[in-house]
Amino acid sequence: MADGIDVTHEINAVRRQVGRWVFKAGEARVVTVSRTYGSLLDDVWDACTNPERIPRWFLPVSGDLRVGGRFQLEGNAGGTIERCDPPKSFFATWEYGGEVSWIELRLTPVEDGGTRFDLEHIAHVDDERWAEFGPGAVGVGWDTGLLGLSLYLATGAAMDPAEGMAWLMSDAGRRFVTLSSEAWREANVAAGEPEESARAAADRTTAAYTGG
Image (cartoon, rainbow, N blue to C red; front, side, top):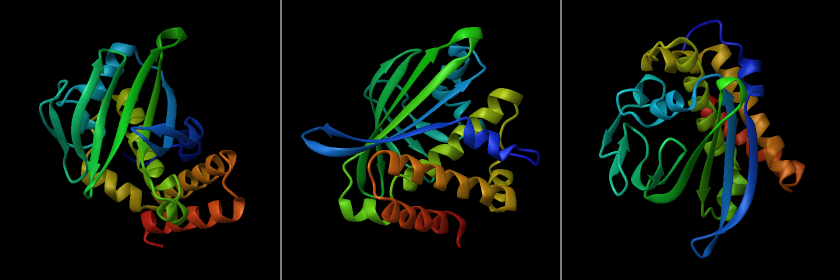
């Protein structure tokens, strides 16, 4: 990441949704992020699944990136790849902090050679935890990942992890996190959460990410 990022544009380029599913015999919360990139489907798929390219915009990854194989993102989640349909979709567990959730990535070609990116994060979340932080707890992190992918696809330049962390701690980075958290509050309200509790959860999420 570098100076000159149009924070408002990057926030507005993402569509965010919050929902509920019955999943694996239990009620689950679903957080969805969607964005269209100006890159070809095969290139976006490769950027999202090639272990040599994933660290250029997200995190270093190790493991066996095939169906049934396990992966580990450095300092973050690991999991098992349960389904894969190249270059359209994959489904995997997302294991972090002793808890298991699931992610599904779907890529769809659009007009003019672009690609629509849809990622769902599905979790059996208890109401108490959801009330504390809401969808922004994972949503802000995914927004940051989509920003990294946007910059990488646009420039081809790999992200320097130290530079990326420094940017997130800058005024621009803190504004990005704050606007992301606010956007997730709006998605939460649109899904039926009362405004007061959604606002409180968003404020706590923003504070957790910014140290405020």
